[in-house]
Length: 391
Image 1 (cartoon, rainbow, N blue to C red):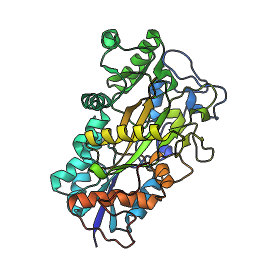
Image 2 (cartoon, rainbow, N blue to C red):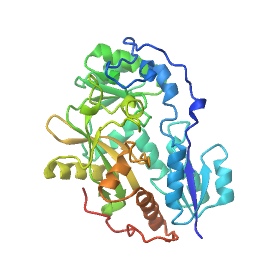
Image 3 (cartoon, rainbow, N blue to C red):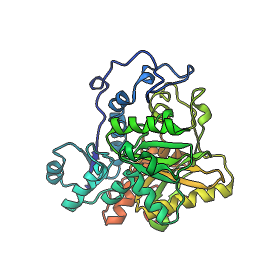
Image 4 (tube, rainbow, N blue to C red):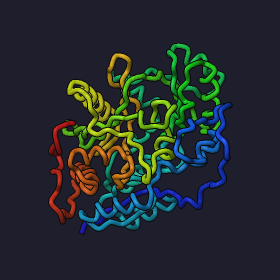
């Protein structure tokens, strides 16, 4: 029987995270402020520094997600968990699976998402998903945008600020309003309503706080006023397809919130017991706009070298043109339909269940690398064939 290694990082138990939070919300010095109508949560009073401590493991997977992925993969072979801790290389070499299913986000450094696939390549072990270069490239928002721009793919104009003294010079050619975010983070880490800067004073305040608390460069980009979408992509090369497009319904956010998918929107206001109706899938858009979004998404997917699957965020500019915001080659895959997870939601809209989604990714990876899986169930998708019409 084929041996499938499941590489992952598991979120710490809640008891391991800080629990003492301030009582009152703050409104100055880069701290967060929230509308009175938000769902009850003491997290809303955190400063940016305190927020970094809370969102440190936001990209890692919960025990429920890891168990669901393991159950889905078990139909294709024997699964062994290999948590991406410090002894991962030794355990991988000892176990030597036939293929690794990689959902490990890593922890340290700007190349953290590439650690597991790089080690797999060192030992000659096939693995799922994008290669180390693409994972590192996409985690650097500026390098991603540079690559997209070089290939003529629309993305908001931007600048990178490494120290506050260069802020004015680096951003002088950008038009307000501007949006700022940490350069090397995912899962909306460091993203709050305060990141939308309508004047230079707010830009100075928010850039200063992000530089000091996230200890990495800050991406400053022109804010696009149009609708936002997120798109799941499955497959490889010319046969990659876009799943039904997810539209962002920012009207579901608490009154007074800005139309951005912030950390609060993902992890504070949106709870399984009280979910936000923030996703519309399939998005209610014209066929013309759908085709335009699908085209720019597939162009970005291929230019950046994504493989097997990814999630790509898109926003419309004033003229209604789709622009690429970010590309995530390690997409979130929460199994519970009550939780807002874009890729599984898009897959369900296409008639692809959670198990089939996970299995499809592994099948694409196996087909690329000549690995034969144990097909104990009929495949939902034949590797190398389109799964469904785009959109």
